[in-house]
Length: 301
Ligand SMILES: [Zn+2]
Image (tube, rainbow, N blue to C red; front, side, top):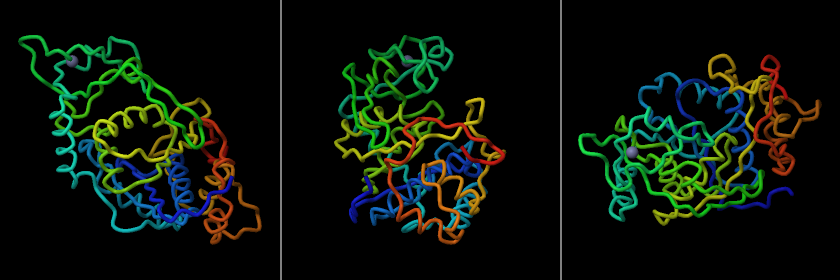
């Protein structure tokens, strides 16, 4: 079903400036932009630069250059998570005031010995829920989770359900390295920026129930979600930001559109690709998969 125009739509793309966008992130950016523009909505750009040791100063410029090359324009100023720390601190204080959080003294190694979560970390068993053992020191702040499943309907992938307590455990909202966790920052930002629709790679679908849990605790609205397939190598591995960097060229654009089930006819001129895709955009045409392997050299499915 093609989208109905929705001028209240606010979308966003939120890259981490730790390197240039690889082809998979470029695909997610194109999908997010097209979904917003096809609805007649706004599209914001947010740099997720909280992870200071991994952020590279030139990477954000490189990403903006990739967008310029592709003709992807965003609305308003680029926002930077590193300049929004007061908002995250306020949310963390609210969670603490309702006793939804607690300090955890467990080391990474202690947690790694437990079962594995959908994104490869250890399931946290709730060891410090009732306080930590004498002699240990607090490291990170975790939010309490519940056994009951959190469910949502993804616009592409369909119904998703997860018991966050069983499958992930109480998760970190403030890290041992004094950094606000991604899960907290993304929820605060999406609400504060009035985001109605999140379109991103399916590698983040398993973290969505955690975000919904935080939205509910903080009394924030939940956006709609659309998780597009993630490009992986033939061996099923993640693409590399350096080796598989997209240029934003019309060749990348054609490959990204084909990946999203919107292959442009050959007679569409390079300069008209986005305009064509905006008119043709139909999320139900995107392959309903979480990953698709691509030929890295040709960057096509
Ligand atoms: Zn602990």
